[in-house]
Image 1 (cartoon, rainbow, N blue to C red):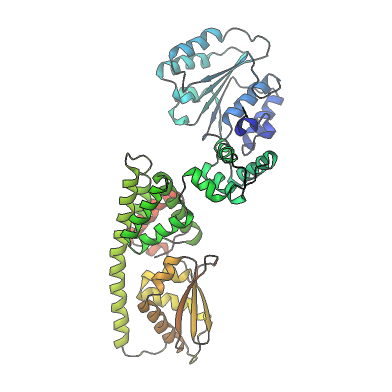
Image 2 (cartoon, rainbow, N blue to C red):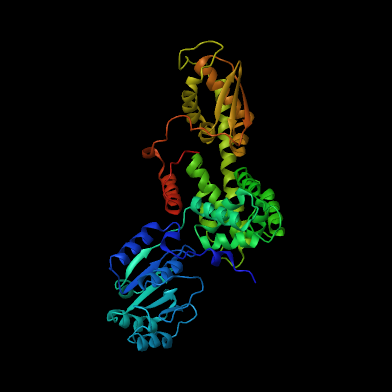
Amino acid sequence: MGQALYRKYRSKTFSEVIGQEPITETLDKAIKSGRISHAYLLSGPKGVGKTSVARILAHAVNNLAYIDESIHLDIIEIDAASNRRIDEIRDIREKVHIAPTSAKYKVYIIDEVHMLTKEPFNALLKTLEEPPAHCIFILATTEPHKLPETIISRTQRFNFRPVETTKVVAHLKNIAKKEKIIVDPAVLELLAEHSEGSFRDSIGMLDQLSGADRLITESDARQLLGLPPADSVSKLIEFIDIGASGDILSLLGELKEAGNSPALIAVQLSKRLRSEIITAGVTRYSWTTSLLKNLLDVSGSKQPFEILEVSLLEAAQVNHQLGAEADTRSEAVVADLRHKPAEEPMKNKVPGDFNLALWPDALNEIKKRVASIYTALRLAKPEVKGSVMTLTFQFPLHKKKVERARHTQLISEVIEDLSGAKIEVKCVLSEKLSIKPSGPKPSRSTEPTLQSDKLATISNIFGSAEMLES
């Protein structure tokens, strides 16, 4: 029977622990200088090395070599998740004063210590208050907020953090090479992202995929993890943006039949929206905030797919209604411009020519007339050849919104007002496009109160990021 990869590659020394260098270096220096505490608290998310560091620490204070599966009578491990009764802690209190059999210190490692009930906590507290010199406690937990403050205050606390994705990928790549696992690099990125900084989870998933005696593809990984295809997530966002409720239901039905987890669909949607907000500055004020809130409820629901459907349909309905109102305003503006007497040019004209240096001015004027397409235009790359302006977009939904006849006509009219040039506007798509938004940043001081509230909610969920108007 083969050994699981996460156990085979578990760290055995402080130097082998990846991603927790501030903690391991501090502990290593303290041990070498003889500054050893009677109690330690290791807290942080699952799979980031708490138990491994606890075992390494237990062996290091005793100057013992840590070999996998090694058992020492003076290093006692207790799983509080399965041993929550008062009897186990009372047993510790009774035996804690007995000297170590052969080591310098008797070390108790209590994993998931937050799972202890009230009575065991009280018994443990009494032990921590007056520990014998030969005894050390190492407590590990994923939920330190559930521990009594009286326990925390009697320990040296070390907070573990999720491991950086790049470090997880590098570690997985090293393991795959040693184990001769043929894997697409994109798979390692996906496993690292899905594990959310947990080495144990990412290595466990690689172990599951390693059974295939062939190249492991991204499709294999997505099927194992229950993740929806990336293009399906993009389509769902596009369908919401154009208010296509029927298409949303149809695509969700396909994903359900394919065995995709509704919770993971919700997570992928949230991540995509977060990415657009942070990297591209795309913010759909009409539906993003409420949808992000609703997606948080999917995983804990008894009917997750139904909650996901309702959440997406509500967002699509809101956007459809606001889009219809915006279209009505756009048509009114265009109609008004057709009957409005010609005004003096806003800039010095060069008949028949439009200089792209005037594009920011054009954006400002378009923003005043039809604000609903301003964000999309800011993220477009304009090019002029002869009498044709080509606007290149990274996102399909931006292209769809701008290429409507009334919008391209409005852009042409603004350009003509600025330069006197008669320009035909065309829209194209390039997913590889990467540009900085054109035009000035929107003033935060002039944001409507409702919009500010929504941005504050987004910031609370995802942290700070530059927001653009929609």
